[in-house]
Length: 297
Image (cartoon, rainbow, N blue to C red):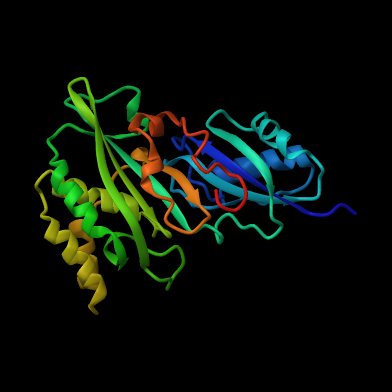
């Protein structure tokens, strides 16, 4: 009987039209996990469970999702990526595959994750960037947004900005870094907001971005957002917390959000390796500086 192997994949996907990473009960709703598992079943001849490092929401993209699966089939690791891609739609691509330690777990072993959100600040929308960014025709004060970003770093209860993936789960997360940068474009600019944390709550990044844009446009003060974090630390009625959540945490479109990197070494991975804004949007990060080699990728 063949020994069971653990394979580790790096996966990119355009989340437009997909119902997130996690498999849905309704088979008519395509998901990244479902498509990968079907491709794996067709390749290996047995059911395959693909486990991702991040359960991205419907419409969210990835250039650095990490997935693992186990099989006793002897298909060489160097052939896995191409063989799976032949069985996947163009919106989902395996860009690297390698053998992993038998006990490797893509989600539980991850020590941090990096997400970036893209905003097209321009008087007119874009036919191309619309799939991967939020169109923002008004002004934005990036200095105010950057100042708020720096104050969000640390360990907080993010009740006002998300909910745990399971009922009763902790809302405490450590945000290692948060940065805002921009790249000029003809008549406007492309703004990117990057976050690195040990883990994220459901819709946490999109609500934080909504709050930061409200500060950048002058509709909120940074103190309003920080008060919401402080409110999460204090006991209060569910109604009071819900009211605070509605005030500061409007959820922006998933189109601008990209899972960029999953880290497995000592955190943080560091946002300095994020490259330029257009690199993220084009999905050109086929090689993170550390690669997938070993357990430090």
